[in-house]
Image 1: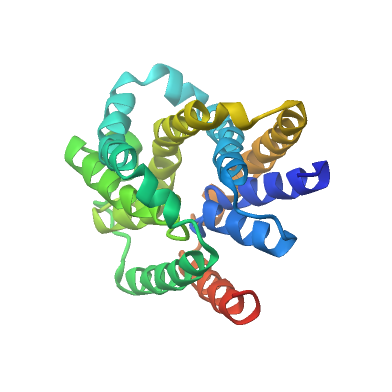
Image 2: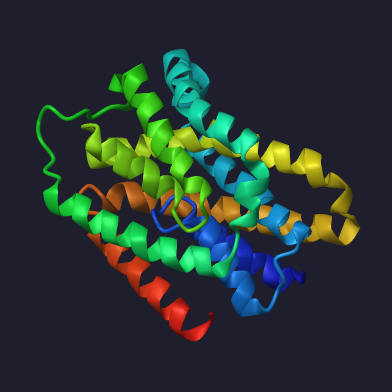
Length: 254
């Protein structure tokens, strides 16, 4: 992987990680368009550079993350379903990392987003702060997150939809999704590193560092923009985008 390709991947990761469009799916599609094979290193690289995006979340929400113990309890409860299923179904999950899976799940997820938004009405009694999310709601949102182990589904998309269906306001659902990414993606990154750390050499480390820094900077910008965007807009544009990208990929690449 060249440094230019690493920068491209970092940008794609930073832009798509917290938008409900599937960052992993977009990185698989990007690799396909750049002609890079989905070998073991490439798959691991795509997971590891997500750490840059996670650090962006930690930086953006540092006051809550380092001071709110009750919030962490809820995040751990939300992480449990994905942690258990991810560990037990690791090999099956990795076998699903294919462009065709991504394309179909982008389309399906886009349709679901549009349907949910057509019926969702934000009300005064809906939860407006992540501290108000109950342990039961956190666990159920975690179940939604586990669906995102299928590439193209979108971790943020699944958790946001779960949050909306469980009575969270749009901004609250997005913030809880961002925060839940911290334990989830740290665990995924650590697990992949333990399994594949021998595949990294000096040249790979440089590419990884460039992608990591790029993802961090871009993700920090996107987080702030996204939270501002959803104060005035619905998630329907992201649903439409998913459908268009999925169809185009089916037509031009597969």
